[in-house]
Amino acid sequence: MNKLGKIRIDAAYAAKDFAALAYEFSPVGLVITEARVIRGCNPEFERMFGYAPGELTDALFEVLYPSKDEFVKIRDRGVEDLRATNTYWDERVMMRKDGTLFWCRTRGHSLTPENDPLGRAVWSFADLSGHRPYQPLTPREREVVNLLAEGMTSKEIARELEISPRTVEVHRAKLQKKFAVTNTNALLQAMSGVPPERIVAR
Image: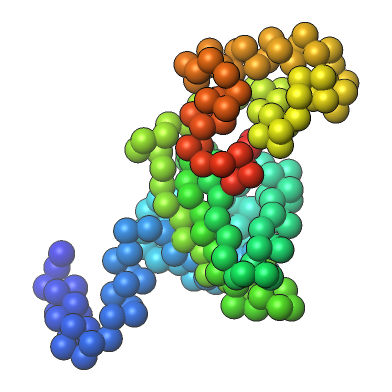
């Protein structure tokens, strides 16, 4: 840390003004949004996603998602939780500037919960890649695991995807082998370590 940084920290402690320090030196990424546009974020958020200081200001959150489709699909996830309790969290796959994908834990607090929970909000993002490396899945594997997380049986998944139950079982077996587990519950746990309803599966 340079001398100027130390002076700023000492001054903040002397004045008992810790809000700016907490924001700047937080070990998790913090971001202020308005209608899913990044209005401000802390240095850890920029570092986590591989962007230079100020580069994400006024950017649409879509740039941090693996695809536009996923950005659109996640739009209403958590809105009811924010409206009812003003708390929301999940674990999802996000994308760095260089295109690499990684798991992160997301928590949200709306500043406008009654009218428009996503109108203005504060979010935190914790990088989980240190203990949960991203495992690439085929598009069909993503569909299958997403429906498994919703509690659907192989027959139900087969009907939903218009494939045979046997094909679903083949995909399930490949997923279990990929994650070195022996059943669906263990698969979902291996993918996230959280309850299935908190998984935003790709």
